[in-house]
Image 1 (cartoon, rainbow, N blue to C red):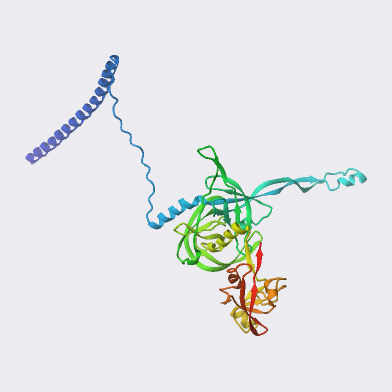
Image 2 (tube, rainbow, N blue to C red):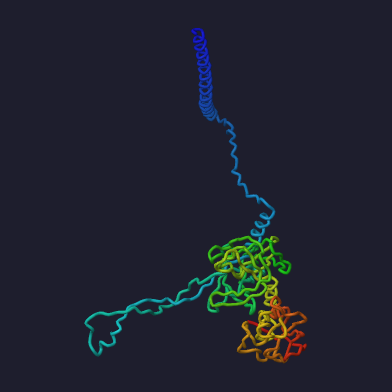
Length: 441
């Protein structure tokens, strides 16, 4: 037993000696390192000062300074990369439209309603005043905002008609780099929620000291005829009139929708629009809807209040026509037939015992009741002999249905075009020709 205890004590002693030696080695190494650093610095300073006195300079110690590397974010998917590239390239062509207007300054004051009676009855024994209001001049205030985008290098901007509806307001365009330009409304589409504005190019001085007009960044217009449901799209706009060039991403949720848009006393039924789940907020109106190639395929126009992820855009092919007409004619015009009508549905045909369940019923409203007017005076319809209660069955050889309305077919033509119509008049089918008139804003 005693032998085991002695053996255990010996082992403890050995462990202590080992760790003591390790500690001595560490202290010695640290002392040597610190002494080397101090002596190196001391002798370097002494030698440098001595050589300096005899006009000999030591070379400066080489200090390697590494620049901080800024690592740019790398897209994780090809789709993400496409979205980033589209936003970088075409966001500068998207502009914010600020609406300002002279509004009256209303001042409150207090007046004694019996003041005029003091001339006859003398001063009243008590003071009695009531609040009154009067106008004290006007001041310019911001009353709204929207979005637009450049469609020509000379400053032509496409937006929504409801953004620039106020004839008495002033419109100012802000670019992404902070520049601002007064805008002039060139034309408003009489049928679509579209309008075209113009701003003047900025003068700059080139390297030769000459004044040059700086062109604007522009978008690429795509083709909206081949869109697919589920296709990825990008919306850019002045969200809420406050957050400029806000980007949202989604898909095309539906095509060929018909909506009734309203706001600010403006109500309009728009056919054949694109539905998307990309966030389109108030202020986004007039902004571009782009595909992953960076092409504009729609113009954001409306959203459903109280719903989530339901927005609408006008197909860009409808806007191309407006742009070309403004460039060539200085205005937007449409062919005009000149009738009030309702599209016949199966329910309407059954309720009124109509001989057909399709077509445009002249002089009737959606409830089948008579409209105040049926035919516009001196219109193409009047000249061709169309009358109230006639049913236009075909326009230019195309059958009129709720999905293919008369208005949609008319828009395929130009003022002055001659078109064949198949109509049902007093129970007899007829084919007549009309020369379309002109309709503008």
